[in-house]
Image (cartoon, helix red, strand yellow):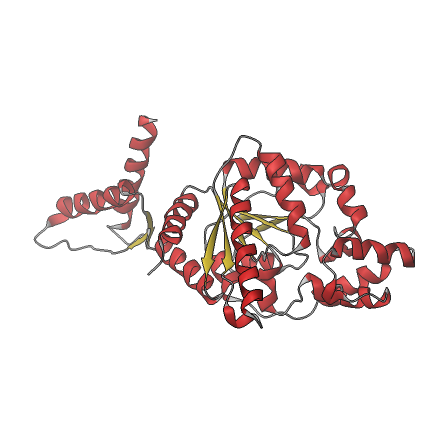
Length: 345
C-alpha cells in the first residue's frame, strides 16, 4: 500500500506517539483547506499599495517591511491579519485527526487558532504559548501545548511578519528558540503544511540547524510530487523536478526526511492509518457477574486478572466499564503489571 519510506515513517511516528515523544510542526498549508489564505495572498493588497506585483515577488518578509517603511507603521498589516484570520473556517480532516491523536506538543507559524479549537473540540485542555511570558508558567493538567512561534491573531501587532520582527526575534522571542531546541532534540517532528517555497521556512530551517548542532534526530515532512499537468512545457516540468529533488536532498542536512505523495489526499489517508494503529492499542474490557456458573468465582477472578495483566504486558491500554465482580479484577491485574515493570526499573 505504501512505499518503504512511508512505512518506516509510520512505524517510527507511531512509536513516538506511544512513547509521548511525537510533535507536530504546522505550516500555512495545513490551514488553507479550512479557507484561510496563504502568505502570498495575504500580502497581495500590501504589494498593490507599493505598486508591486505579488505574483513575481518572492521575499514577502521584505515586502511587509517595505510597507511599514513607506506608510510609517504596520497598522494596515495588522488590520489585514485580523480580517483574514477571524473569518469563519471549516474543520478539516487533518486537523481533526491530529487533534484526536495523543500528541502533546504542537508548534506552528500560523496565526489562526485552528489547532487549539480542534483540540478543545476533542475535550482536550490546551496551553497556548503566544508570547515569551507564557513560557515562564505551566498550566496544570493540560493535554497539549501549542507553541505559536510567530504569534497569534489575538495579538496581531506582535505577529512575526516583517524584517524588523525577524531581526529582533532572538531578543523578543528567544525563549521560543530555547524551547524549540529542547523539543527538536528529544521529540520526533512531523512537518505538515509546508510547501518549502514559503519564505518563512528558510528562517525556520536555519534556526533548526543552528539549534540542533550535533544532537540530530530524524524528522519527517510531507511534500507533493511535481506533476507534468501542472506545467505548460516539458522544460518547465523538468526544471521543477530537478529543483524538488535538490530541495529533498537539502532537507536531509536538517535530518528532515521528505515523504512524497502524489495527491494531498494521501496525507489524510496516512494520518488516518496512524490514528487507526494508535487506537488499536486501546482494549475495551467490560463485564459484570454475580453468578459465576461452572467456572466459579475464584477461577473467573483469576482469568479477569490475568487477562488485564497480559493486555498491559503487550503494551496496550485498557478501557474498562468497571462492572460488578469483574471490573475490580481488571484494574487489579493492570496495577500488578505496572508494579512489576516499575520494580524492574
